[in-house]
Image: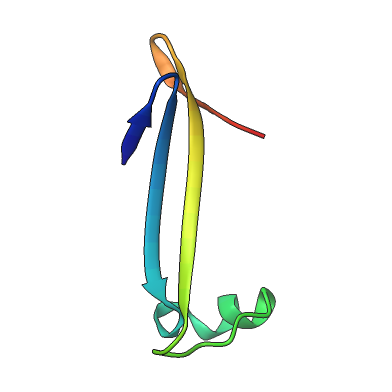
Length: 55
């Protein structure tokens, strides 16, 4: 997690062989120890609340 002003960035990377086969198939992802998937979420900070997704 990193914070940038009014935004919080969450990120995670994993090899696609860690995905369940049915999830990978549903989303058209090739499962492999040589392929990576990067997940990034950006939230706008909200006073006293969970962040709001940025679109």
